[in-house]
Length: 358
Image 1: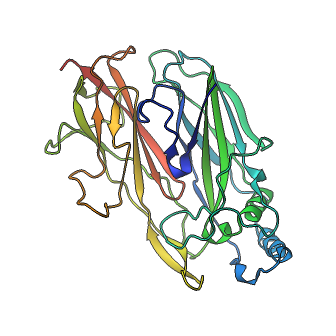
Image 2: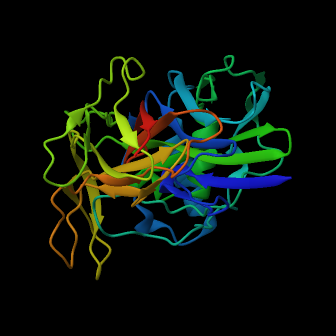
């Protein structure tokens, strides 16, 4: 059985495909949450007074007592693609990784991260235990022939006080830097199995006016033949109505519009003393590119300027290499652009290209 694991919160993927940007097999390209971040009113957690395991247990009990019994539902939508399944059923199983808790007093993972601008992922990245609670399990059949193989599926996550208490026990630093609750999605069809892990982040309210993170949005895409081409805009409202043409074997640029980046408060630790201070960071946005035929280079772009060289003319664009011959499925190529920020937010758009003779 072919098994591929995707860590969506870290935007990584194992290189089990001919090219990671070409969607040939069963894939989970993203998992989007309608509420990627939840702001929680909690007393400040001071770990400097913890010298014994029982101290940490008592401190976490005080924090847990301030939590509501449960939080409002969060809808999760995996982007599952089965491009050559022929409409076969796909078995989807989602679990919540509630059993990652370490023993009292044990802080797992790499420990304190001092720089602003990213989720402090202090817990380790082990797979979810086999006995993790099942969130959803269902067989889903994609729409009939002629589609892109998208498997429609959504599920609701209701996080309880007990779940956050377990997460806090495993990751006490999460009460300071952001506490990720992990959901693992497994999709199986035939001999193919893919596993994706998604994190929803619970953060301490640092300011009265603080608002939760919103999912980034791709508001526009431009197709360019080269850097000097003014470009052709994709119609995101009707992406399949009149797809732009690309010659077989050609290289073109596909460039997303730069989305809005949010300024958010965060705690920063002094490198020498460990003292915490309130700071502000502007999130970075990352764009990942996939196609049903052909390849993209680079696989992803982002809004952060390069450190050692001048930025390219179109820093968010990726170069699409069209196949030299028509794919078996015909002349229509589907393109997905997945937009992620560093705080568990994500969304995607799907457009199409039509391959024509050179």
